[in-house]
Figure 1 (cartoon, rainbow, N blue to C red):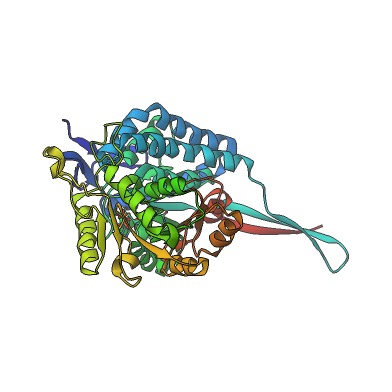
Figure 2: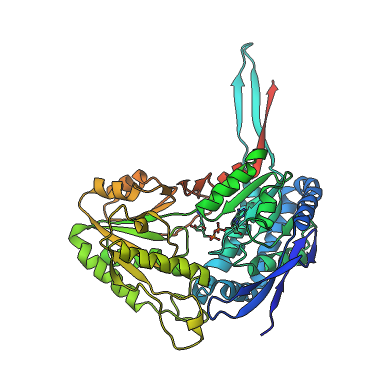
Length: 485
Ligand code: NAD
């Protein structure tokens, strides 16, 4: 197998890094790529190139700019199989998931924000003035400037394009830094931009890590105008400190410890299906995944048994096998973290209903990063496993007796990202969803997304919202123009 070289893309040219690091497969531990880590000088040059490109890009007509975005979407679609292989190679996620979610949604992000940029209205007011006449106020929106996009490894292309697309659509230029764990699709996106004729400097790519590397070089750079970041809450906090001296705007999509509430009046089978998906999708590595399940007591035992059966039946396998439902975790390092929570749960007194270990295949996958889908019961609500994000295929299930108790339990967390409510009583569905201290509450569904809606969380789960005109608000600065008529 050829070892791919993943280079930086700066000012319209691919560049070697000052050093390289290895990208290993989470499936069998084999070396799959060498990544060229950007130096401080390369990040500086990327920022300078983005500034040079900014005036012309911002001055393009909306039609011309959105044509560029559509060309990026088309470029992803045209190289669909390359993106698919790269995403699966980096993450080990099942082909069916990557084929239906990551890659199409990666392209869809460019289309959605092109459409939004084309159809935007403008905020304006007619104001009565003391002399009996009027004034017209309107908020003219300019690009924020050079935007740093720092993204995580769990949905690498989808979460990168979710920020690159609106940034470009609203006239900004971009430096993107993908996770060091999943550098491949970002490199392909740079190739697509290059082939599609995006002007040099509009979209730059620098590879590397956080502290002492490209991530920190970006967040401490005086000439980056804003940082949009998806990742862990602790990293968000470090980035906030890094940008504080320059008082830079940030948009943060961070971790979660999301609850699902299953009421006795729920469609039982639909709830089991939905919770199975929300716990185990992408091996539990979606920020929106459920890690705490609360079930109304009359159906509690039956629900735990049904969910455990679904976990035991889950087909864990090779990512490229279309029958595979769950692949490995993203890396051996991440598996160490997840396994440490499996051990901690036992120390904290959990009953391990199913899973709790590492599957044995008797082939190359034993060198990968697989874990068993796992269900705990019996933990105290103060246990660390109830409070801290694990980010693996695991949940705790606990009973509740009243709606008030369910709401209190779900909200008893410092995170505030997502919740799912399962009930056939629509009044209760609205009431409970509205009572959730989260940015996203689903009723009888999960991960159903409309890109025009606000996305993000509160508390440890983030700052700000993106999506639709919420993205407009982050990626532009308004100047209010007041005209006396
Ligand atoms: P991470 O915070 O470790 O890394 C994310 C990115 O930040 C990487 O590109 C990394 O190199 C960079 N980084 C790390 N330290 C940095 C620093 N000091 N300065 C600048 N950059 C730095 O997160 P991860 O492990 O890649 O992703 C998993 C986490 O992301 C989970 O907590 C998950 O919940 C969260 N997440 C949140 C959302 C959301 O929308 N809320 C979506 C996906 C993932």
